[in-house]
Amino acid sequence: MSTSRYFRAQAYNNAWANHRLLAACAALPVAEVEARRTSFFPSIIHTLNHILTVDWFYVSALEGSCIGPSAYEPEIPHVEFASLAHAQRDVDARLTRHCDALTDAMLDDDVSLVRVRGTQIESRDRVLLHLFQHQIHHRGQVHAMLSGTEVPPPQLDEFFLGDEVALRAADFAALGFDEATIWR
Image 1: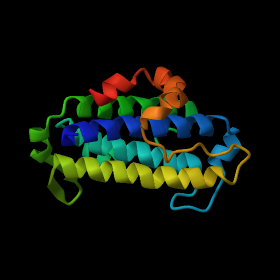
Image 2: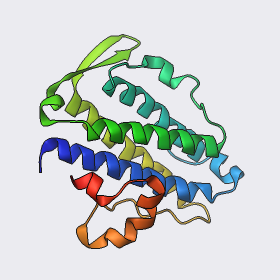
Image 3: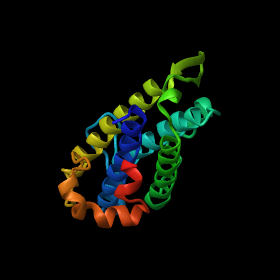
Image 4: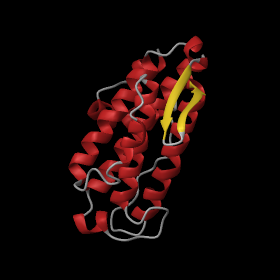
């Protein structure tokens, strides 16, 4: 497997995990999404907004026009769950498109991260690795918060095993992608 193919698979897995997590959260009453909980961020909606705004920051940088600290203002740009889910799906699609276009040679390219303290230069592969790790970390927190509700947390520790295609077919159809796209 080429390195660019690995990153493409990670981007699609990221979109799939977000889809599953957001589908579970959508089944919660608004009060449960907003309820104060024990975690790094104080609620499900706050944590999901953090995932989204960090995605905006890094995906814009990967696309070549980092939006900088404005990605985090306001801290909770989507107080309504439906608009947040739509925005997350949009940025996930941007990330998969970016990774679809990757070549191995592009992974060493510089990416400019506009920070308050100045511009940080990182290689594209490191930015992608950081972004995927960030997603996994905070999705895990939302997963744990869901455990304290009536809605069971979805299984998020799956990857794309060949024998389990049928188990994810409905999710893939909802997301508009398929196995062939991921593994080309």
